[in-house]
Length: 268
Image: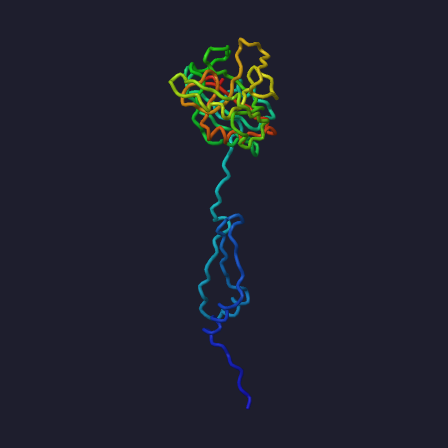
């Protein structure tokens, strides 16, 4: 006895079609949450054309995926005028900018800028201290001002062991200091970590080196060092944690320099 071939009802055909192998639409490349959305194949559409079509989830258009724009980095260092910018070497890819609140202020802010992708990426902004009487374009020994200008950062050292800097580092007990600052604060530990500013000194030597190419009357031994909670004689000071961070971030291959001065002077 020959059995008749079973035929699928329209409803069954729809079920079979729904269980078939779907194709996929993809969201825009780069979306971390890209999803796959099934769509009926051409063959499935043909099989179900005689019945009421099943609803098919629609895929979001590729262009509808939200893509965060890449941050636009400044082409020039903000807050610096043409005269200041002209003094920064063209091959410098790290610039440590210390900006004083006013010409006669001993409080300032410091930030390390890194040149990347044709622009400048800003680091964290840190509180800092500078000279007791503020800033000067022409520093002399004992004037209690920090010098305004652009200075190389090539050498480091301190009383404590190298925290992991790529700069040449001279560890010595000679970096010890005692006494009190202008506001009665203890100076102990101020030279645990130091970075020499290349002001009136011979680059490539220990921060302790006393060579003064412009003569002793123009001062020297001006460093970035650990903050003691008050104004300095002429140096720049940061918290101990920030000093360690700065030492680890500076890279001699990036020709780091420091740009120092009050905000108004730096816009020149």
